[in-house]
Length: 375
Ligand SMILES: [Ca+2]
Image 1 (tube, rainbow, N blue to C red):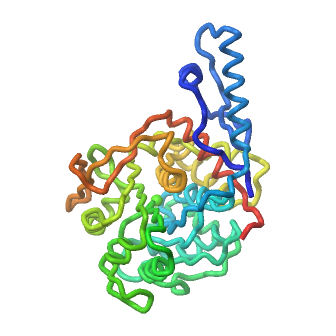
Image 2: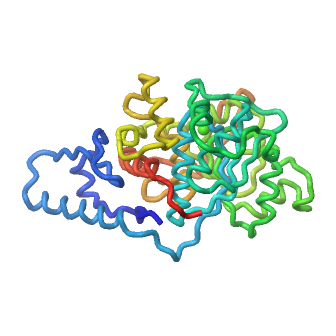
Image 3: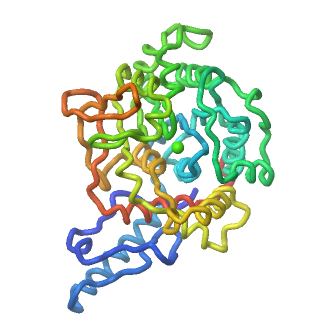
C-alpha cells in the first residue's frame, strides 16, 4: 500500500494566488512544488500561513489510502505507442490500483502492431499484475507504432510472458467477457487511444458470455466512459480522427455518461523530467520510456504533454477540484474533426479550474510510483 494523496487539496485561494508552481527540480516524491516564488512583499504573517498550508498539504499527501472506499473498476483501452503519454497513463493506473483506488479489469489495445500485447504485458508484469487480461483488435484496425522504438527496447529488456498478439484474445471478446462478469453499472472504461474497439463492442452480437447485444451490454454494465479525445470547442485530434468512423459511431450511440478530456487539457501539462532525473528509480520500464523519448524531441524538453494521464486521473478520482465540466454533445465529422454543442446529451468535457501545474505535480509524482508486492 503506497501512501497516496487524499483529495481535494486544501490549498486556500489566498495561498494559490501567492504561489507560483514550477516543476524544475525534484524535491519530494509526492510534491513537485520545487520552486516557490513569493509575490511582492509578503509579510511574515502571510509567509507563516503559506508554510502552514504547505505543511498541511504534505501531511494530507502522506495519509494512507482510506480502506472504506470502493475501488473503481476499470477497463483501460490504449494505443500503447505511438505516443508515450499512454505509458504515464498505465503507470498511474497501477499506482491507483496499488493504493486501493482502482481495480484493473483488463488492458486492451486499440492499435495492433505486432508486439503491442507484449508491451502491455511488460507493464502489467512490472507492476506485479501479470494476470490482467489483455486484448488486441484482430480485425480491421490501425497498426500505428512508436517512432522512437521504445517498445522495442522494453521487449528486449523486461520480462513478459506474452510474446505475440495471437496469444491474446480479440479486444471485443475481452470487453464482452469482462463486462458480462461485472455487476450492473459498475465498470468505468477509459480510452486513451482510438475508439475502434468500442465501436465494434457496440455492434457486437450476443455470444457465449452474454445474451445481450453490445449496446445492451454497455448500457447494463458500464457506469461511465472516460476518453482522452477531441479538441474543444472544435478541432481535429489524433485519437478521434485516426479512426473517424469508429469515433462517429461511438459518440452517436453510447448510452451511458461520457466524460472527455480534450486536447487542450493535457497539452499544457508537461511531465516526466522528475522521473527521468530520479536516480533512485532503476530498472523501470516507465522511466526508460520517458528517458528515451524526452531527449529525442525539442518539443518535450520541459516534459511530455500529459493527455492520457488526465483521463486516468479523472476516471479514478473524479474531476474535482482540478476541473469543472461542461455538459453537451460532441459531434464527429466524416474527416474526424469534432465540434461541441450545448444541447442536452450524456457527454461532458473537462474545463480547467486549477493551474495545470497542480495536476502536473500529481502526475509527476504518480508516474514515479514503483511496484509493490501487492497482486
Ligand atoms: Ca494514447
